[in-house]
Length: 417
Image 1 (cartoon, rainbow, N blue to C red):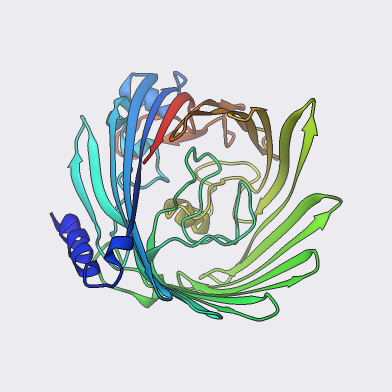
Image 2: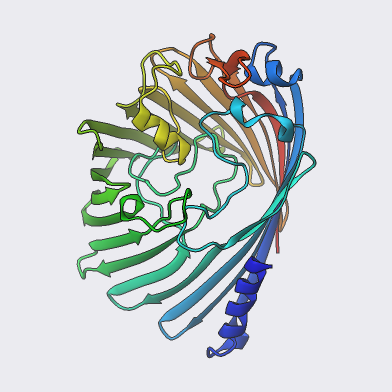
């Protein structure tokens, strides 16, 4: 198969490199069991006649890396699969989402392959990391498939414009890799300058188009207890200026990110985030909490499909923004019950329509290389609100209902080797 041939080619090529015996190989397997519940007037229930959905998602990752002199090489092979009731939900029930199968239609290299896509199961394989890097005393660079994370958000991240995690994501261990060039210059005083160039293809015709590319440069400076980030970017044909600030405030950490983007139609959009987190000990237990405010000027105070900004829709579809509302707040609390048990509570709330999503999670280090995560996500709010569900009519079938995140229970098993 195409993806396997590419992976084998680079593994064979790597044998020509020095220190082949020093290669590090590791892996992980993850299994997610979930049960989702929709209300009777949700669009999913109207379209399928079912309100309860049980699903299984599997993910396996095999990782190989090697270092010699100042260079390193990384290869991650990923196999992903899904089966269950949700495979029969029509795509029209989630008008903002893309395919559940990760593909490389918009990436420079096609390192993905769909193995199966049917009502009984969906399976795909891909190379999620494939890169060569160099780390000198001051110069660092990396070319190939890799992941970049910028910004200081804990739930929402306006400065992270490359595949940011959703606030609802269960697994945030690995971001989806992109084909890009990354360089960093380290100054002797601790400051650094980073550069990224990320070309993209048009999924419609497969052509590499400059208007879809991202070029970004970020400067970071540190002064005492204060960090500053300045980001300049050309992203999907739009100019972007962002600033980030981190400082210590009485033992807590305060962060602020602001992203100002000049849209193609001449308007200016503002995405901003401010958060604070703190750790303490209560009744003999380690406790961690955070609060975060997020502003999205493209979002609506009163959410409706007809009123959604087209610039917001494009960001939702490419997974760059994960909020329909204009002003949101996220609250989080973690209590370490024992060294092997952690309990987490997270609340996302739309400040205008007062709808919320509550996430309850338990983490248990079951065995040395095995972790269990179990939890619930509960949607709270009236109809015609962001988390309570917004009215939707399918233009093809003319069926009507509400779309939004269902309430669900899940068990996540993670095995490392």
